[in-house]
Image 1: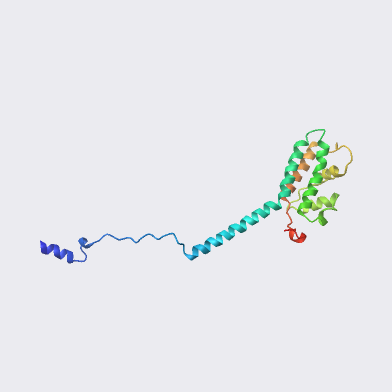
Image 2 (image 1 turned 60 degrees about the horizontal axis):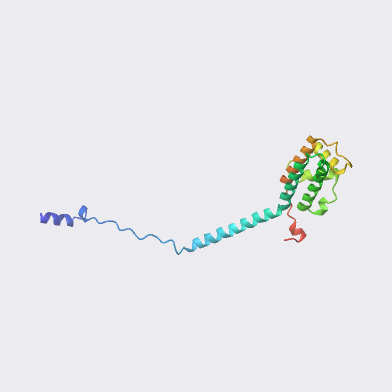
Length: 181
């Protein structure tokens, strides 16, 4: 029997000759390989650039947020009979101020009437100021005295068109032309 056991142990295919598998030590996470430092640097640069672009966009649209806030206040106060005319007259002023913030003064300041409406419509993809809202804008801008010719529906249409224009117009980044950083 001794001889048989000894024969089995000499047999390389014998199960008695099997040993447990020894696993290698786990790979350490630190220190990182050079490629990870490179990838981390690229990701940090991309995040810094994205943050810069988002901050620049947010800063460039401050005037837009302020104008929309002012328009919301005007639209809430337009239902008051004693303040209606004064609030309606503020809408063209608000549009002009917003346009002066977004575009060069030489393009915006002298525009009035039909040219002003054409300019406003040219700065959005789809024209917002229709003939009726353009007429209402001109009446609000140039009619002296009481604005009884502007009914509630026309006033609401003007406010909605103004809100759409403030939201949709393309901001021209001309800060490099003015020397502003």
